[in-house]
Each structure stands twice: as C-alpha cells, then as structure tokens.
Length: 174
Image (cartoon, rainbow, N blue to C red):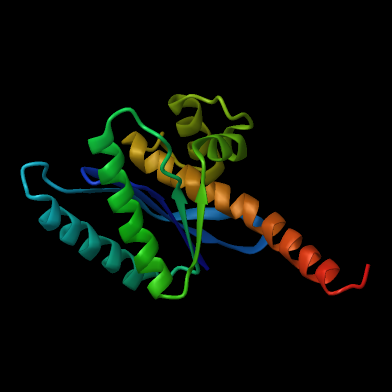
C-alpha cells in the first residue's frame, strides 16, 4: 500500500510516496519536489500543481495522504499559497476516498527524530536512515514530505486503535 506525504507550497511542493510492507518497513517509491514558476499567475500555477498531484495519485493510488498542517506565519502571502497547495492535495485525496490526515511540524519531528525541536538537518538525516537512502534527501522540501509520510506510518496504528477503543466504550452503558 502507498502513503503520500506532502510538504505543501505553491513554488515548491515536496512529495514522498511511501510503500509500506510487512513488518512496518517503508521504502520511498517516489520522492521529489513539484515546482511552479513564480512569474506565472496564481490560477495557472494552481492548475499546474493540481495536474501534477493528480498524476501522482493516478500512478500510485495511495490509501492515505499526510499533509503538514499550515500554522501561523508572519508572511501572509506565503501562508496563503501554502494553504492553497495544501487544499489542492487534500481535495484530490478526498475525492479518491483516501484518508487525509494533517500533522503539525512538531508532531512530524517528534515521530521521525525523537524530539519536536529537531532542526532540518536532523530530520533529513533521520529520513535518510529510516528509508535506507544512499544520500540525504534534497531539497529539504522532499525530505520534509518524506518525514510527514513516515510520521503517518508511525502514528496511524495508534490512531486506529484509539478510534476502535472509543467506539467500543461509546457503545457501553456506563
């Protein structure tokens, strides 16, 4: 099965497609960055990003999409474009029946590097180690997307167990 991780952005949108196998091992089936020219109008850039995301989903038919949650940023223009790219990815996944989950940067760092204050280089090194890559994934947007996908692979079993436990206790008379 495939899980897609997205580090959203309109100029640079990091992506990673993880193939998860027996024993919880994951391998990167695809890893990179989708780019759009900043000189193009925003609607044209969004359409190009949508085509690229659609092609990625067509090729791999993932069961889940993990996206970095958009947090407050000082630069409103950047926050808007990140939100737009994130929305495209989530809508594409939801239209295909994929599970869509958002993670905060601290959740991703905690899951991949062991602490929420890890820097970019630590995250890149851990992604390299966890995926058995010959080199540190570059650019950092691709490494971030891989970290987001790895976070989901690590967190999903616990989230499912919690949901099942909640469903079981909700049905009981207290």
